[in-house]
Image (cartoon, one colour):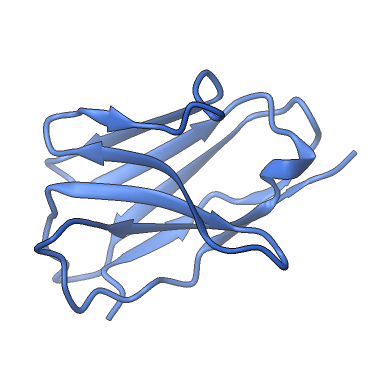
Length: 117
């Protein structure tokens, strides 16, 4: 069962910015490690950002400088801000907890990001 709902996607021009939100479904518990992932058409889902309880972040080198992840542990929410959006950033973005203790958590519906002029 999905524990979180993604929102904030949309159509953005190249070079623009977008902030995606990850909010819990009723009754969702909090997790030590939360991640953002994306899947473009015809490609495998890939990890784009992670954040630990307390704020430690992990972002792939290729995305550093443009992707910023944050979380509010009090609200059990997470955001992903993407700056200078490129056509290659177009994908469905998902949030999901990860870690060895995470079991039985399904992927949500995701939120679609379209980058086009």
